[in-house]
Image 1: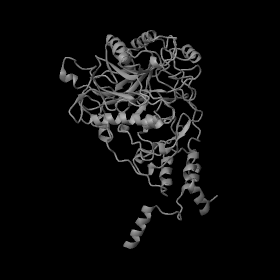
Image 2 (image 1 turned 180 degrees about the horizontal axis):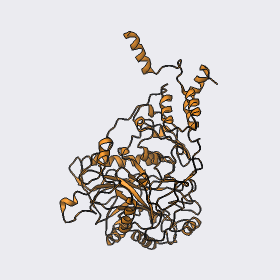
Image 3 (image 1 turned 135 degrees about the vertical axis):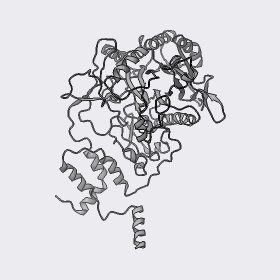
Image 4 (image 1 turned 90 degrees about the horizontal axis):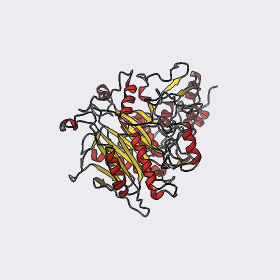
Length: 570
């Protein structure tokens, strides 16, 4: 039935809301997530049983970040659950691993690249792995069940067994514990390392305040795989690492595939920055957590302009917020939050995928819907002054898919201090996916029996010396695609190591919102319509009749000025 002009006006006022009602309503064929080749390398094949996807997944993203695609397999189209990845889906597949040693990394990399004509790694690099773990400072452990000597011995056993290329630890008790416990033990395993407050670390901002924390973060790297890279600041002072109160940033050069005796050859390896963070722990301090990430990335971007080219970035640690829905997840993945950041906010479980062309526009600066953290909406005013982060054009994504543990945290969690109270995604690992391929993940539980035992008793236990479980991932450098560099202006040119430089955006002016602009509804609607599915053409026509232009609506101020100028000229 045709709509009257008055009815159209009423509908236009809520046009964006009407479009939202169409999102995710179309039926989606039955499918389930498949992580290609999921088995423990060198062991009998053990298929992973991922939790089922939501009954009607939306085109909107899942869990507070624009989604990293997971390999989806329609049951009627593919029967072999261990088929090698194809050129279409290989970037989204990974292997579950128990160990992160060089042999496991190489085997996972070879199988991951098998059958694909693209995504090769540079010839002078090897895959590397990173383990991140909040080890629970002894000063925070309110129990006499396990002494530090017992817990430290078990911590080192787990690290030695995993044997990763890089280790990020949070809650090292104090600097003495780093110097006299961890550093000698890690040296014996072939690692070098540093920590907040160490002599080779430049303190950008010292830890201070009435609740000054003794415990700190520490980062270690295998000496035969990485070496620190000095950076010259504006005063001409060389320093290899820098820290703030909640983060430690190390810049390392990958020397795994070069001749260590040839100084010029060593200097040609790609550079990786690792931000090891332990963010603010209070549940309602979401703005503080995001600001801590922002400052760490800004410090790195400022000093990269005076140092060697940066090819990769990994941010790992205890984020003290859920991966599935949080301000930090949205900020890292999208690159901005808040009105002054160019995005009004993204709802934790039903965010629209905003076109990149609109993210930089003034129209995108208005509120879309609130962010959620710990189940509560975050007021936009609390995010008002947060600038976009400088690495937003490098496709920062979570190594662990946000779907893991989203519906039922008992199936996949990283923290369980109390029985039957697990938290999924508290510990996180993010990487620049333009230059790094995630090819493997450390399995959280070696068996379902282990998972159920942890849920029953809580952590720590005699076998698990912390209230957190370690997370880990295997990464491979992504070979530079010359054609992609020529087409995509966001990518920096290929350098001599065969890996893209990271794109760093410095001092980019943030868009200023236009308060109560009549055109904002159309801009918001364009964003919604870009990903809105339709069941039939009739459904499309019905919606278009609602949002069709209404002649008697007030003009946008710019349009009104243009119309007046045209009349005067006539």
